[in-house]
Structures are given as structure tokens and as C-alpha cells.
Length: 294
Image (cartoon, rainbow, N blue to C red; front, side, top):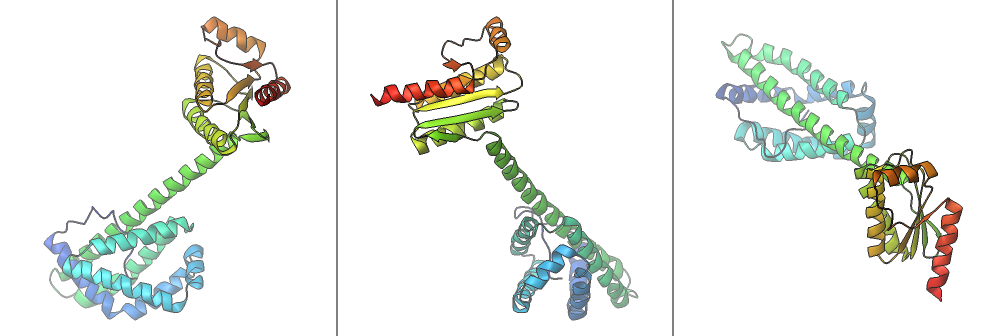
């Protein structure tokens, strides 16, 4: 095992003299038993589906090269204090493995097996030396703590990015901008229209207006469960943005009781062009296109 993911590049570990000495001791034992430990870890990997699948897909020569680089970076960090290359390399690996869907617990299990393999050999090497064993165990523990902290950070950052991408994709699917015909777009809005969604909706709509050179947009809010003053203001802002792009906007699906409630709330609907239902909105949009073509 030639090193694992580690903290961010700026967080180079600050080690006590005992930790530094202990790391050198465990590195010496690890290097002396590397071939055996590596073979045993490969058997451990067979019990971990994600890592096992990755190993099977990776050519042996590529595995050898990755191990060579990892061992070199590990030695350079522990012996010379040059931690940044190791941290950067293993952080990138952690992010890549997380992106491939390998579960974090598999790394935890593998690191645990690495520790179980190394501890008996440290005892064998330093068990009779006064204080040497405890120092080497401390160095091993500190190194693995750095490694697991880095793995966890890489996984968390990657998962957060993927969750954000998934949320954006869901938002785009929830507000599809449909091209009804040339120069005419339809945006059926379904669900709660909060500030964040209204901004995303407006950005997506303006993007499609530019791409299709649309002249009229129908926004159907039949599927919006509640239209209050806040929602109405969001719609007004969207309509204003559409106008700045040189297009007209028509709001459809405003129920009679909703219209009355908005009047009571004092919402200024004077700038909104509306239609009772979607069919009426599409007919109005067609009329606007026809007049614009004359």
C-alpha cells in the first residue's frame, strides 16, 4: 500500500519529533515486507467489490507504475518532509475513486487491513527496544490518520459536487422550456416557485430565447400550488427579463380565486399579459407572431 488520499495541499501535517521518528521506523518495516504486504492487501481487495472491479480493469503494468509513484512520494514525504506532492497525488486519486462510485467504507476496510498487517511486524522489529515500538506505532497511527482524513475530504467534496450537479439536472427537468413552433416557447411551471428556482427558471428561459430567437413565451402556472405576492413578484421579474430580450410573455393558468387574492394583496398585475388557460395563451401567442410578421 503506497500511500492514500490526504488533506488539502495547504494542510501539510505538522509532526512532533516522535511522530517523525515513528513514521521512519514504520516505513522501514513496511519497505522490508512490501511484497508480502502487497500480496495480502490484494487478497483483501477481493472482498471489496468496488476496488476489486477497479483492480481487475487496470493492467498490471499500470498498477506497478502507480505503486512505484506512490511509494516514492510516500518515502519522500516521510524521510524528507516533502508532503505536498504526496498530498496532491493522493487527493486526486481519492476524488477519482469517489467519482467512480467506489464506496468510502472500502477504503476504510483496506486501510484497517494495512494496519493489521503492519502492527505485528512492528512488534517483531521493535518489541524489545525501549520506547521504539510505541514511537513506531504512533507514527503509523498518525500517518493513517492523515490518510483517512484526506480520503474523507476527497469523497465529501466529490459527493457534494455530484449532488449539486444532480440538483441542477433535476431543476432543469422540472422547468422544461419547450419550443412549440418557430419563435414560440412554452414553459410549464409545476411545483413550488421559490427564489432559487425562479432565478434558475429565468436563466434557462433567457438562454432558450437567445438560442431559438423566440419572440413570444407562454408561461403556464396551472401546476403551481400557490400563487402569493412573492410568487407574483418572481413572475413579474421573469416577464421583465423576457422583455429585455425582445420577446413577449403571456401568463396562463391563473385561477379566479388566485387573481382575487392577488388583488387583495395589492400586487400590481398591470404589466402582465394573461390568458385564462393554456389554449388561450397559445392562441394569443400565435396572434402576436402573426402581427409581428406583417
